[in-house]
Amino acid sequence: MRLSSPSRRELLMAAAGAMVPGIGAGRTPPPGGARHLIVVFAEGGWDVTFCLDPKLSCSARGSCTVEGPEVDQDPLDPLDREAVETFGGLPVVINDLKRPSVRAFFSRWHERIHIVNGIWTGSIAHDPCRYRILTGTPDGTRPDLASITGSVHGEELPLGAVDLSGWGIAGPLASSVGRIGAQSQISALLDDTRSFRAPAAGSPYPLFRASAVDDDATEAYLRERTLALRARFSDGGANDRAIEDLLRSRERAERLRQQGSGILSSLQVGERARFAQQAQMAVDLIVAGMCHSVTIDTTYDWDTHDVNAQQHLYWDDLCRELGALMQQLEDRALLDQVVVAVLSEMTRTPLRNLAGGKDHWGHTSAMLMGAVAGDRVSGGTDHLLESQPMDLQTGELSSTGALNKYDNLTAGVLELVGIDPGAWLPGVEPFRGAHVA
Image (cartoon, rainbow, N blue to C red; front, side, top):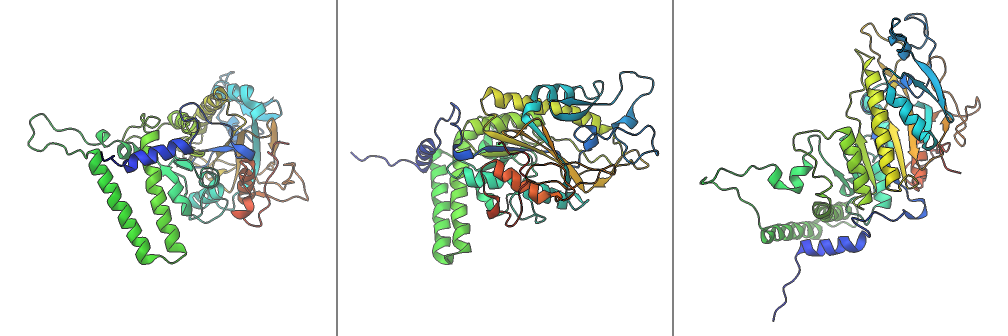
């Protein structure tokens, strides 16, 4: 009797099961400090004076150097008051009427939060600042933090990194990164029944659906075509690397289809995934062993040129959803295995413009959470919201120190997740103020 050969899909599934232990039952702790990374990106430029970098000194517009959230207070409402409150070692701006989630978040999680103020970005344009804060370089073709982390630590996983945000930059590591698409298009790629509606009964044009045999034949053809490219264009260098990446990306795509469809099933084609939805999927993907790092997006437009008061709503929502994310990580026993980096490419100008909004300012802050030295603030800004020098080893302000620039921060986060930053950012001194002793 002739035994049938296993299909390519069956072989991939067997390989996936062998390489990803504990699927469905949680992951074992990452070895040797190889921590997972979740990047939360607040696109547009947050106003750090609403929370992380207190500057409450303005009694009236036009009379001070920094106009923080206090200029929005209603003088007739005694509950609408801005204040600085310290949670553990974290001084934070609160307003229990407009931003109640801020108090709740820092009360619960301050021991797991490290605030970094006074990060110099060196630009006031969105794209250059986004490249710098996500990749540690001004080059938009270089890979970002999550892509690097996934490539180094997630080699044997279906994907190294997953970009749920749409802002990720994979660069040369694209073969190990999966993206859901700006309108959740990956949902249709994983399951074509979600994008093609079946015709009415009796239609002379029935919807074609490929069988498993068809799928295997298509995959075999594509693989043979790729191998033919290697036979023709092999050069022992860049061509071979590109062809190998193509082969590996197809295999990883199939593993994602087989193992990740359930986790991503809540996505709706044509709709952008909500912040809370992205956070839930990020944790589920890591727990299931689907990837090592994830980038998610708050989905708010923080670029408040016209109405800076919108920042109240954004900060309240941000802290509420970050609290939910941290709770999920604690429930899955992942707080010591995951670094959460909450980043925005810039902050807003010290003063408001004539429209009541704020424009771009070439400095920013960050929150590092989870497996970090919590209850601490590193760095700072002066009375003009300008970054001040610090000791990059301790995070303490120092007149003889250096500016904590975007590349120092990126190098420091790479070290936090167990990666030598020298291979990616040669010659850059890492910011180590958030490192666990």
